[in-house]
Length: 169
Image (tube, rainbow, N blue to C red; front, side, top):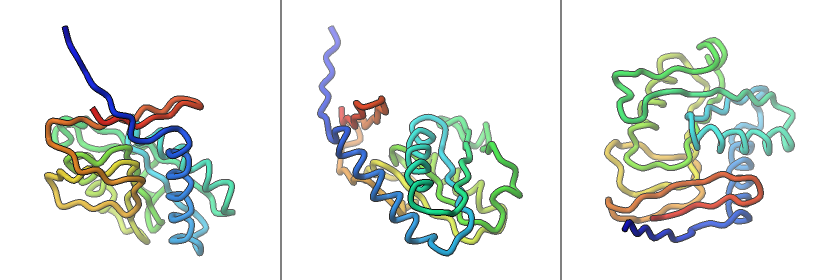
């Protein structure tokens, strides 16, 4: 018999508030920009990026470009990182790399590395949950919540319509 315990960290309304706050922070940092690239890492990061993009489209006249970032999260070196838009689509632009949970920092650091191959106006990062067990020296610019958890604990984000939850198990 397998027993798992889940502690709900954030409810739907709290997640919506954090998404809105992060979107406004991104807007404030890019108020002069005509285009902002929101680059979501496939999985929860892409879903989170789409939610941020939706709010940004409501509060700014800037063109919000959604970019999908793909990689094998367990082995980004072997798989490499690819994006849904070509380099010219984000060259000399403001880019925000988005993921749902910052665990070890591996996914975020390889995503950052990919974007730094071309000149950018600025590169920021956004996560819903920032854990404090990083393997790499990566810091997130915008975060919903920070958690001090043990290495054995797992944080997962479940985006569901009208029932979004963030679990620590």
